Image (cartoon, rainbow, N blue to C red; front, side):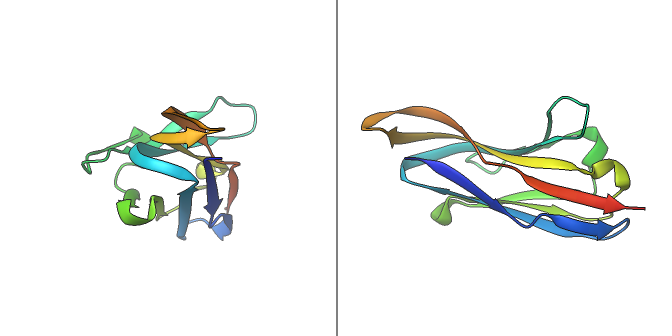
Length: 123
């Protein structure tokens, strides 16, 4: 079974930094785009950043210049370095991956989500 496991969330003061990691495991043949989304209480889930297999990236306007997404293709892992954190960055952060893998014996293109990791920024 293909799954994503996130780590690195926690409590930090405004202006601080955190680094999130997300590792994909299972029968994976190729990982395409990987990204991070977040959902704050009472709000819809929103895209934070995405990185494609070739390395191109996109960021939400609210995090440009503060967050950096990167990936290690050999480890099927994506990272999100978050600097200059603000209280409005408080949310559950979810990892997302589009990949070619085998799930329950069937090979195909899959979209997989992590379980989420909570980031809390205090003022």
